[in-house]
Image (cartoon, rainbow, N blue to C red; front, side, top):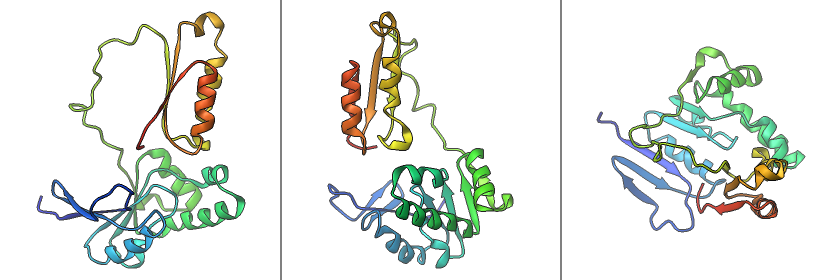
Amino acid sequence: MGVRVTWLAERFPSSQEEDETFGSILIKRRGNPLSLHFFSLVEARKHEVVLDSVAHAVPFFSYLVNPYSAALVHHVHQDVLDLELGRFQASLLKRLERMVSRYPFLVAISKTTKKELVSRFNVSSERIRVIHNGLDHNFYRPQFQSKTKKPTILWLGRLKKYKNPLDAPRIFSLLSPDIRSNAKLVVAGRGDLERETREAVKEVGGVFVCFLYL
């Protein structure tokens, strides 16, 4: 469509170069999860339109330097922050997250997220557009036509407190012995609760898979 796109992201340990091209997208890697917020303000000045992905509570505040900025909000973190952080840090990040309401335009990935933005951050409904995450079903499709013959419980995701990964082995342990002997538990992920989850899965006879990236 003739639009030039730049994707700004944090650097990671194994990255060889700061800038690279993926198709027609220029990828710039700068800083770390914290300093990226400062690099974003510099980068936002250079573009006609900016889309800030607010995936970890704290916005990038591009609207301060570019009036044509929009916030892409995945979900509201207010209650999650209380579970994951100490009282002071959670209070600070909750205040910063509420500033997402100052963006002139917001995109929510679900109706639930839009509802929370309206009810908890007092964002007018007219400023929010719901655009669901897309999936190419021609590329991502089941490889098997039938389910496994062995009943399987699969838990997949980041191993964080608010995602409750320890629920999977706990539920598996509550199965009656005859059902559990013919069932399988698989937990896959990586995160803060990796050690506790690995031990809990092993204790009930399940399989734990550690993903390199999530």
